[in-house]
Length: 606
Ligand code: ADP
Ligand code: ZN
Image (cartoon, rainbow, N blue to C red; front, side, top):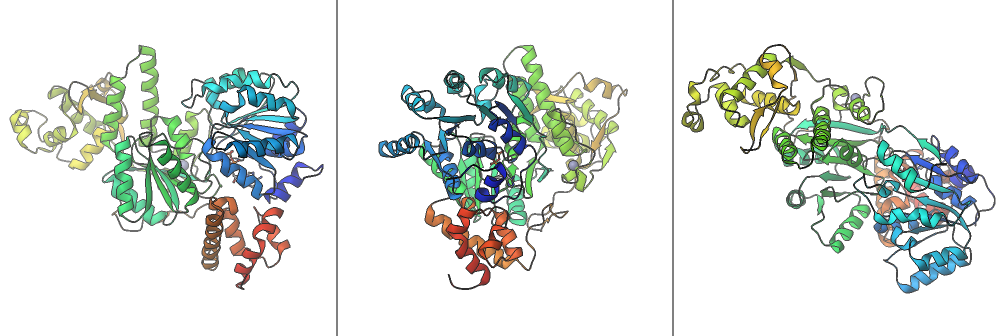
């Protein structure tokens, strides 16, 4: 059991990390002094140690309230693997297990207890709480207390009533998602008006943001995974359950370890797939939004959107599940005109009063604007959350390969007048036929070959016209006519263009890379992966880690992170002391696996 030590001692000895990250120490010290704190930091920034270390250092048990029952076991195992004394109580435990945990609590042999909110609020659990000294309360995923977010959990509203009975015990509320409104809710509903607030930048510099034109989404996705992330793990987001099933089945046919995840599956199947995703190093999950909250897997190397996300908030949250370990990761999206049409139709159909509709409209504009932008994507993304980002980030597609633009004013005028002259009810394919002068059967049937706009657009290809329509729809210069499936109608923003009082700049769509050709990274990743020399050893160490993890039925990263293995492969430690010098190797891990890894590195039998 840890003696009176400093936070740094704990970090080094148990976690194997040499130093704290920005603000961690400040937060820990506030809690050690008995302060309540509110922590709003992006995923992967290291919020957990902010309550784990104080829980070890303060006398009494740290109570961690978390809604993520499926992950508690892994979280607690990971802590135990580091040599810390942690337990959890949730509905998955047998009566016997529960008794053991309670025994450890009463005998003072646990420093951290993870509980689900449902259990926290029960009479019997509160009876237990009164019998043990409590060091702190940590409320993880604190945004669940707010009805504004989409993860609202009613039990969270009762937490304050419980913690109020323990005056003087510091509380931490932690979240990675909170707009101003949710944040206010958290402070109010969790009784945190006096809390010290720690809010950090929302930038995730290791994530590379890219958006490309969707031509054949499935194949583009496959090429992206095979070319850039072979043998790595990622999440693919789609909008419907059916599509999740289809895409997952197709990827599996192509030899990938892919599975679908959505709310239409049985709970048991969902849990099993989630567990598999956490354990298998190359697992790909194809999911609807039902998947993700609290997915604690640090080595998700890519998040791909094959359909538009619901909003910028959803996009930030979903892409944020990539690269929690700080290593390079991709946020990749393929999107097409049909996505814009679908989203616009949803908006037009949506119920609610004018104010709500306007808000939804603005949210959609922001999302589509992000997709179409030629500016730095990070700047746009962070700007949306009210954070300014200096100049070019150098790690998004637009920064790496500046997009070209062209004066699309005349093209826009032709396109819009074509919409107008055909009665504002046709879609892009028909309109394009008219513009390029293609006398298709439908064009002839409607007599549209006799329109003034017939054939006026021969200077552009059909693909270029599609791009024009997509951008007009994305920029709100066109919207969907609900009476006609996928037909366009003008908006009030269309008129200044038609009248020639406003110009339009459009982006030139880069050609979509041929499937199968290696796309390659256009710039070296920030934290350069593994050099040629250490690659074979790195692969062997990964294999060893996988074997150990399988034997213990643990996710591989609970044994060691990739980052740690990479450093081992590069520095080749030959003694236990040298091994301890590697980031992410604490004393307990050396005891558990040190010799196995040293033997592998020295290429001698264990
Ligand atoms: P969050 O809860 O904010 O999403 P985590 O607490 O899961 O993030 O931490 C993300 C990763 O960063 C974890 O793998 C964690 O072990 C690691 N980490 C945390 N603090 C440090 C540190 N000071 N040095 C190195 N790695 C750290
Ligand atoms: Zn950029």
